Amino acid sequence: MSAQLSAPRVLSLAAGEQVHFHLRRHEQVRCKQGQLELKHTVMWVGTRPLEVRQTLYAEQACRLDDGSGWISVRAGDDPAVLYVEPASGAVCKFCAMVWSRLREALTDDAGQSGDRGAGRPSHA
Image 1 (cartoon, one colour):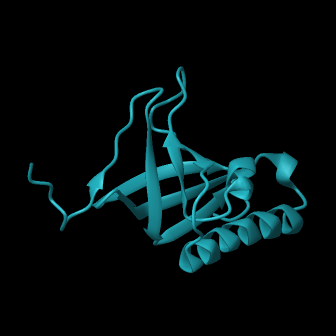
Image 2 (cartoon, rainbow, N blue to C red):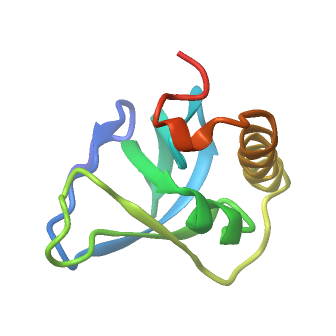
């Protein structure tokens, strides 16, 4: 049972599957049309680092209080879209800071773009 701990791998989930994760770092966050997109996010599942590309919907990102949670793909949904749901557990300070920034980005985006209904992205 030899797991490659050095290089992150892309996590792929089938509909209905879920896996517990803990956020270690993120490299890029973009707000676009009510969604948060975390690109090249490195997370730990157990002892394995995973590189996850995911889309967070605003309401779910706002409910997530720390860096631990569940990634799940709902049955019938596009498997490329990963949904993050909060899980109970100790709050990592770094993770709390990351999610706090995500919430701030959402709030700023909602407050600054007065033409959200126009259908164009807030920032290109």
